[in-house]
Length: 99
Image (cartoon, rainbow, N blue to C red):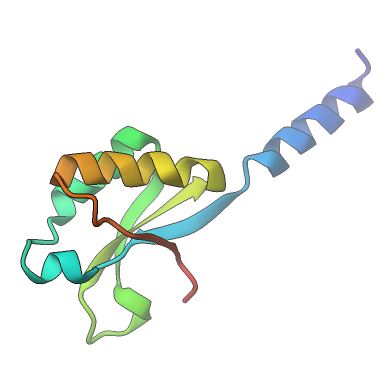
């Protein structure tokens, strides 16, 4: 295989693996249940999330910290399932970080 073809394959693979930032929303489920950052971080890591961190929701200082992570779009469902199973609830919401 020629070097030019290999470079094209590598470039296409990298583009297909484009990561976006997502966060585990502090939804109404957490009104009566603890938003356990440590548990959520572990679940996101087990599911393959990358660059896991916390940030104040919407980037506002007066909002609670939420777990933010990077992942390819096709991994988000797996992360949601892992977090849901870890917290024992179906009410986990993961949104693309847009702030």
